[in-house]
Length: 145
Image 1 (cartoon, rainbow, N blue to C red):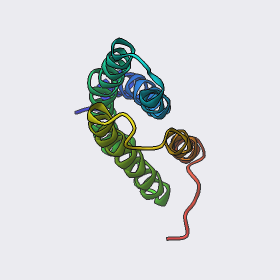
Image 2 (cartoon, helix red, strand yellow):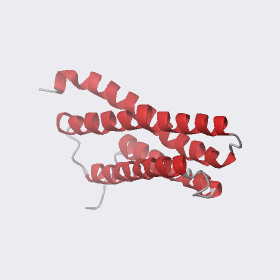
Image 3 (cartoon, rainbow, N blue to C red):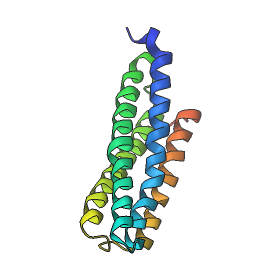
Image 4 (cartoon, rainbow, N blue to C red):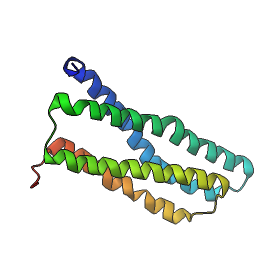
């Protein structure tokens, strides 16, 4: 039933992934900016930009990416062990997204609650997860299980 729609579904999935991954890379830097805004107006702008990035861009893109990816599993016959590894990495992306959402709420109320250096270090997490997912999809390695 979904086979004729597969090219469109892949396009939607790929586009949503691009937006979601971009927000995963941008959010730690935006969160780190909360502590460096000296005036109230600048701080409100950073809070608004961070919330917009998370709420209006990242979260909808994450939902579309996960749903469209799930819909593609059956028509493409993607049942290998690599899929389990990929889904584990995608779960890591979802958890990272949720942690960023929690930090958006915390730093909105208390901009100095978390050290900016830690937030920038947190930015390394998508550097591990996103290429890992890409590698699993492109190479589809044989897994021993």
